[in-house]
Length: 305
Image 1: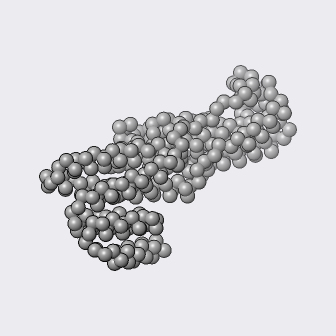
Image 2: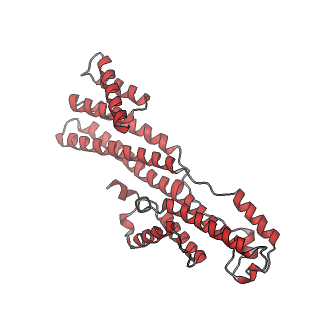
Image 3: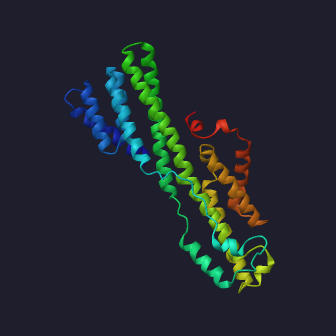
């Protein structure tokens, strides 16, 4: 299906070019690329501009190509929230779940009220399909900018029109830096951090259902049912956690979020104890990999290599 879509796009591109009065003119290439961009065919539009530049050697085609990438980047950037999410300690925890008075100062009413509050204020996470779409667009930008970098490098070596080339190289590099930084921020604060916060929230809910300290268990109406629900919440937490336990995106993310990942992992292990979930097994291996990596090799720079 993907191959058919690409072929149809290429046929469309050919039709557009044939409609252009002068196929060899710079204006013709720009108009064709602009039309394809409006038709949501950015990949083919960029190829038109690249082919046009190779045919005419006119720098304005590279400039238009750069503007097209900048516009795509701005659309991606608008979707980002750019802040880290962590689960905040609640009054219930301070009152009922501190290590010195575990369960001695809370009632069944307190427990049910806190459960209702946590379920009502569930931390939201981005849909996996949406994440894949955004990351795919960042990869498209990277491919596009890498190709243009190569052409600009050759142009710089030629020594022609040096001032314009230097100006364009500066704009190109500025965009590269923004894209690298913003992609890392997106991974960190729009993808990984909310998933980690939701994982931690589910782990907390599991402790409300079935705290580890035996003194509180006498307050629970049905120990076996509470224990079952606690395990189910831990299992759900493991599934949520596994969605961001991806070595590539973690290594490309911000250092604060990598620390958050290790912190949530530690908390999960403390609460789950000997419990084993299939989803949880690869998480520990990835955590070990994170601990071994040198900080200078991680983050936004890593993705661009």
